[in-house]
Amino acid sequence: MNKMSKYDGIHVPPEAHQDLVAHMMAAMDISQRTAVPSSRRRIRTLSLWAASVAALWAVGIFLFTDRPGTESDVWVTDDLAWEVFQAGELELSVDEAAALLDESELTQILADLTY
Amino acid sequence: MSKATEESIHEAWSSHAYDQAFSLMAQCYASDFYRTALRIVLDHATAQDVVQEASVKMWRALPKFKGDSKFSTWAYRIVVNEALGTLRKSKNFHRSLDGVDIGVPDSPYFEADRLLADLYRALANLPERQRLTFQLRYFDAKPYSDISEILGTSVGGLKANYHHAVERIKREMRELNPDYDFESNE
Image (tube, rainbow over all chains, first blue to last red; front, side):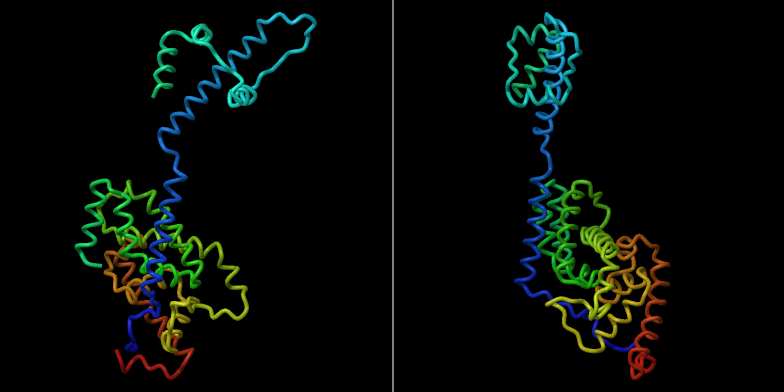
């Protein structure tokens, strides 16, 4: 083949090289920030579990509360219970939690909350 | 890049200092990644995007890197795959643009005489594998063993690709300019 330089004609000057390095580092930073850290995953799991407990509790209240004249069924969805929980309008005392959970579950949730 | 620097990346990686390993890799190879990406996608801004997207993938994959090849080879593979994926998504768009010099990189960092520009134009008519093999072998002087890892093709297949690429480039370049005389320089 004809003799020609193996130079591909692309010359990245030093300042442009540093820009590219900065782009790469920024990509790493963004990737690090968007990754869900394990502690956040744990809190999210805990929150879902707490939301399920809240949903059960709410269903229990509706099922076992005397409501004169109420004929229609009342459905409490997971989403609604979650919304209530997130809004911070649901508070459980230790006694209430103890009534809903057995001893090992209570020990576990206390351990998780103090994690 | 010197062997010592490749080793320093490996050293940082093996001590789980992934930030440091990534930073060293960026310092060493950012321009090479850009050049490789630009030769595939042929557009400056797209090549920059490719490097950035490939960087995200490299960073995420870094802890899973097996350490059985050079970092540069592993990273090149990610860049090439990212560039090819981008090219496939945007190929129709590029082809439909009027006034685009097909095959010649569009970048402020690219400068070519007529011979080099014709080489790029000839390369544009090659099948993808042949084009990539030629670029990595001819422009980057990479050994076949590295190209084999980057493209996931056997060394024998690469040698055949390179041979066919050279023959096809000669034909294409003669069509562009009959004055090109390859035989006397071989």
